[in-house]
Length: 589
Image 1 (spheres, one colour):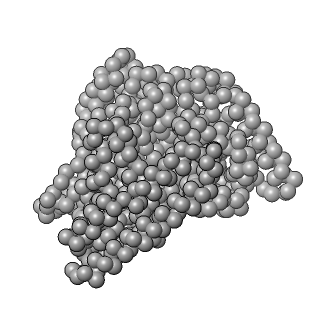
Image 2 (cartoon, one colour; image 1 turned 90 degrees about the horizontal axis):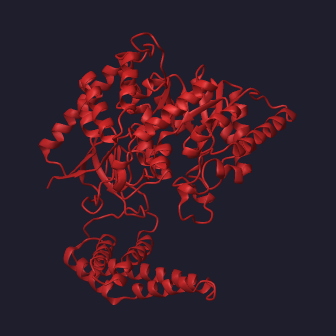
Image 3 (spheres, rainbow, N blue to C red; image 1 turned 90 degrees about the vertical axis):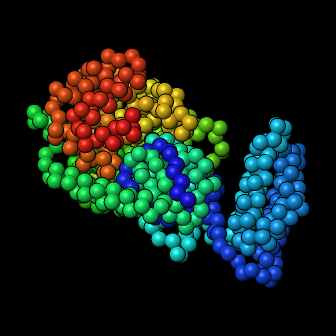
């Protein structure tokens, strides 16, 4: 039966395909019928016995390694886990279900574990409610042993894969993109979570914040993802699928129509030039960047080079990647951001002590100033690559002048080393920072003395200014780019940049949002960097607007005290000017 789910619009476009459902641990659980005889049932139950025994042995080995005086709590947890493994009720329920349904043991075991956890969650006893996560965790351990090496493997008979998961990490998104999946749907995340940002950059539809969809969707089910309105349709009826197939074709035709502007100069009606640049995550996006009609790369997020591998990429490997991109994008600029590791973006081989709040921990510039070997290798690679075109280095999450002085000293060291080694490099490379925290805004008049350019990262600036987790769907409505405080901050940044005569750009998701791009121009921003998917539509808005339109929009918005007044005004104004965007604005305000 057709089921409709609503979530947060993360990345536009429509995708139609088959679901591959991943558990919270991102294990793929196959579902299939076994032969209806006692031999098949016995074989399935033996698989479970072996997995339970293997899990028990792993727990006992771990328990023996723990020193009782230092880790009593962990030993207590392991004792509880062992009791769950040996619980005869689990085996009894699984046996009954397999015998009745003739469904494979992996699927049935997962169902039993989920049912047990659900029963605990509704208990009136606080102690039992707190045991639910332990049951799920223990079940995941058993499932891994049941499944063996099938983690993240797709069934051979599924075409046009759409990933349905609790959440996805940046490395997983990269891996799935390379396997040509069609779309992403996640239970958690907001409009500026990394799932959303990366999906837009690689032009794949995505919907985030879709509650419980992994529980109501099975692998192989037909599914429609409508990324621009945040809608997911599971098991669509024939008429529904035909309707969205037609809409998908219409969307493709609309995008083709926008391509007529690709070669036009990006100027307002009065002739003032606006520079549109691309945000890029992966080397594989180069073709998308070159075809979107942009004027260079305003943000190359290099951290994704560091994912899906077992060690830090060395200088030579990074140099080859950066050189290729710089040469391909010439004569335009490439702004290469130093690896922004931390928060939810940390490769397994760089996992250190667990942080209670990683988004306020060792991330961005803080991380590379601790790991100067990683920083120096990357700076050397960028300096060398810049010799072959136009590139600059941008540092993330800079909060004070002290950090900049350390950075500048390391850059000087790298230049001196390369000169001694007689390796060609760009001696006059430009250095800049991302403005992402209130601290960097308050100190911008002083910080700007030590850099050649600044770029506003609105995603984190909004998150840290409004104290709103941008990946939390529960507070997604509070993550508001049009908040009066954000508009004032953006205006203040522009005024300081103007006084200091320093190059200014904006590279957060707000820059590519058709709702706000004209507003940003009115605030004084002339360089906007965004996902390639958004460039044609933003360019169309610019070509059909004047500087007076933009200034009036910004001046009026700045006068409002209530955020809902800002949103209502911008929505009404933009729909009035661009009625072809009515569907987009109706769903995104």
